[in-house]
Length: 373
Image: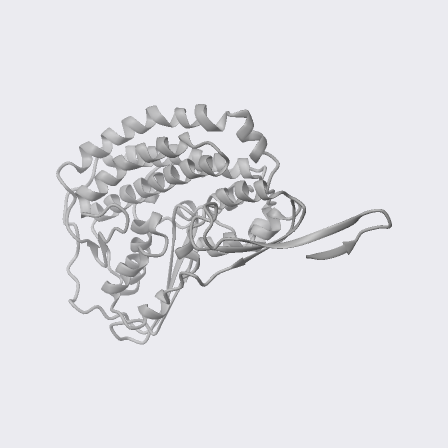
């Protein structure tokens, strides 16, 4: 305990406390070292390293096909999109043009992944601020997507369906009908999210005006995804650098200018509606054709540096590969959205209370293995 004299009449006692690494609000092994004055936060210092697995170093010893398998262990709630990012990087380096069928299926699965991730986030967001019911509603809808994933590729969380050159195998015969059923179901259930949580007066008081991040600071910190767009920063990779089938669909980039916790919340709610719109446009006419192109059994990239970015449920994921012409990269670096978003936590938390920190951290939507690789 450190005693700091403010003036002749009052004294402030600053405490250093640990929040985590085992804490329900950190959603993983993240340790936050808090400096507090009573209930007021003076400083937040994240401490990582509890789940570091050296994934980037492991990529240097593995082939490009094997690297794909590692990426769904980072942000496991965006595993399909992570896989796609590596495949796109390899395909661009080899100048491979995948079939139109592959592009459309990848995009549909990416948007289903985004909705599934946001459903989990929404359920846990409510639980973090004391609304337990949201957890069950969110998981109810997420399970329908997981069933589609399981039938398509045999997995519900860490998918390994994308391969360099296309898809491991074609979609299941039930894929189109089950996806249409989910879209119809979820369009009727999303309004319940607003009725249960968005319009709740207590929830709004816990989130409005809390954890404010300006547009300039969002850009300075490298914030992306809903965190950046909640501050009015237009940064959707799907809009600015379209890939797969995003150049053939119409959707709106979700933006809010308030920059507070409630704004970041609303961005994700709106994103779920936009994801449904993207899926509806593509599911009605999936092109015929092959589900992959033939590639060499051992893939070797030409010498050079290659970069690809995609929009995960948490923001911009970048894949940077340095190749020396062998079957594995000389160096591989992932630019994960969670790491940059976590870096601004101290900025938005100072001056608030511990309860505000929990609410603000929930709208950063942190997945720790994505940060601590």
